[in-house]
Image 1: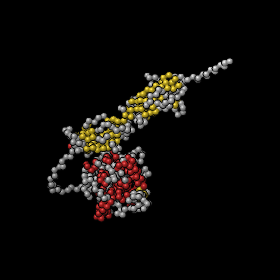
Image 2 (image 1 turned 60 degrees about the vertical axis):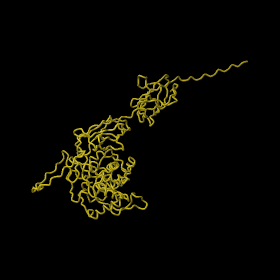
Image 3 (image 1 turned 90 degrees about the vertical axis):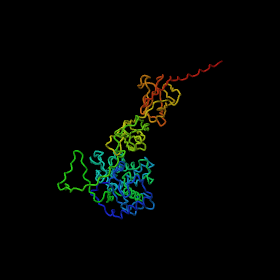
Length: 569
C-alpha cells in the first residue's frame, strides 16, 4: 500500500463498531466456506506477527494496507450481462481506472494460458490492488501503466512493522537501510527480485508498472499449484500475500463485490481509500535514507531531545528465552552430492541440486527451508515455470530442488541456495549449463544409390535422420556441403550442386534444422557436365557427420536411326 497519497488519510466512520460488524457480515455472507487452513492464518481479528514465517513468504512483508470495505449494496450488472461483465454505470466504488483494469485482465488471461489449473480471476487482482494502493492511487498511471509517482510503503524497520533490512541497495525503494513495499501491488524488493515479471513487453520488470506488477502478482498467487477456484487454496494464496485474517476478509469482500459488476472509468478519477490498517494516528514515514552522495537527515533540534526519565522500579525477571528453532542452528550450507548440471536447450536436466543444511559442527539440520533461485540471463525454469522454489530439508538435512528445465538460451547460469530466515548464512551457488541441441549420429532414411547423368538432376532428394544417444534429435542445427574430397572439407567447385532462390548453383548449405522427427530433407540436387563420384557431407551440432556418395554418369548419346533394308529385286 502507499506510504501516503500526498497527505496521510485519516480513518473515518469505517473504524466504528458498525464498520467492524460489516467486516464480519461481509466475510460471512460473501465468502461462504471461506475458512483458511488454521496453520496458515493469523489469529482472527488481528494482524499476523512479523515473524520469519510471515515475512519470508509473502509479497508485501506484511506492510499496512487499506481497510475500506465495499458498499453493503454491491453493484448489479444489467440483465443482459453476466457476472463480472463491465457495466456502463453503477456505484462509484465499482469503477476501476481503465489502464489498471486492462492490466488485471491481461495478466489473468496470460495466467489462463501459462497455468490453467490455477483458475485466477482478474477480480482477485483488482481486489488486492484496491487494498494495497487504491487501484494505483485511483489510476494515476501513464499510458504505459507506470505510476506517475512512486507508491512506497513505510520502511520496514521493526518499528511497528516487520524488520526487513535492505536487500536491493535501494534500487527499487530508494532506501539503502531498510526495505519498503513498492508499487501499486506493494512488492517488497526481496520478493520482486524473483517474482517480478515483464507484463507490458518493454523488456523491463518494473514494480511501479501496473502491467508488470499485475502479472507478477498473478504468478505469485498461482505458485505451489494452488487452484484458486477452491476456497481453501484461495485463502492460502491471499494470506501468502499478507498474512493477516483482517487482510483476508477485506480482500474477499472486494473480490465478491467486483464479481457482481464493475465499470471502467478514466485514469486518475478513481476514489482514494481513507482507512489504513496501521491506524488513524500514523504520520508519514520519515524520508527514505539516502544512498551515498545524497542529502543527509537534519540533526534533531535540542527541543526534540528526550528529557531524562526518573528511574524505573526494578522490572520483573524476563521469562526464559524461546528455544532456538532449527533454522537458528544452521551455520552453513554444503553440497549434498550434486552432479554436473548440464542439459540441451529445451530439455529437462537429468540431475537435481541437493543441498545440506549443517550446524557449525557439520551436523545435519532438518525442517529448514532452503530457497533455490535462478540467477543470471537465462530462460530456464523450475517445474511449473517458476524461477524460485523453496524446499524443506529432510531428516538428513538435505533439500532437493525441483527439476530444472532448460530454455532456449544457451550458456551458464547459477542456481543459488539460501536458508530462508537466515540472511547471515552464506548462500551456495551451483553452476548450470545449457548447451545447443546436438546429435551424435546421422543416417540416410533411404538406401537407393544416388545417380544422375551429366547435366541432369537427381531423381531422389537426400533425407537424413539425426539421433542423440539413440533418441530422436529434434531442433538440431546442421550444414550440408559438397566437399572437394574425403580429406578436403572445402566446397567443391564442380560436380553436383543445389540451387539458390535465383537458380544459381550453390554447393554449401547452412541454417538447416532437424524437424520434430529428427529429419532433414535436402533440396533437389543437380549435375553439371563433370562425371565421376562426388561426396556430400552433412554435419550437425554435436559432431554427428554423414558422407553420402553421388555418382554422375556420362550423358546418354542420341540413338542412331536403324538402317533401312535394301529393296530386293
